[in-house]
Image (cartoon, rainbow, N blue to C red; front, side, top):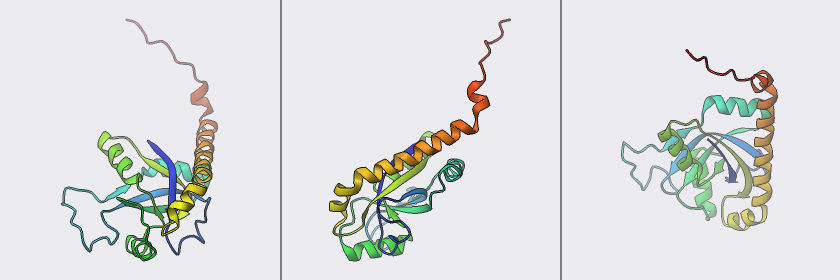
Length: 172
């Protein structure tokens, strides 16, 4: 399963990941509140971390040479400047995306490999939603272009498989 979407960049990370950049997500961290570990309790049976498929991530990197990042996944958009700084620092993540953790969890439960490619649409904080509305389509298109490059690379890398004719099963 491949999630293609947009993300916000945390304060202090925009030099590495400016608006319009695209990244491959390696790890996702669920943030039940904006200050991880301070005011919430996650039951032991509840996972708060997910990893993308190493095999798909490596293939994406070979095809696209995109940066690899970790993404924090809060339950709502982080709109305060101090909350954005706190969340980015405590989670040690470059990006914020609300969907990646849930999709990764569903893929894991189904036994399906998962990866995510995200375009940077906004800075996390007070202007984030306004920036996302302005830059979201371009960021999503950039992420889609990266996935298209990945798919073309995969097709070019395996021409023998694609050209092989299937043989009819033997009847006995």
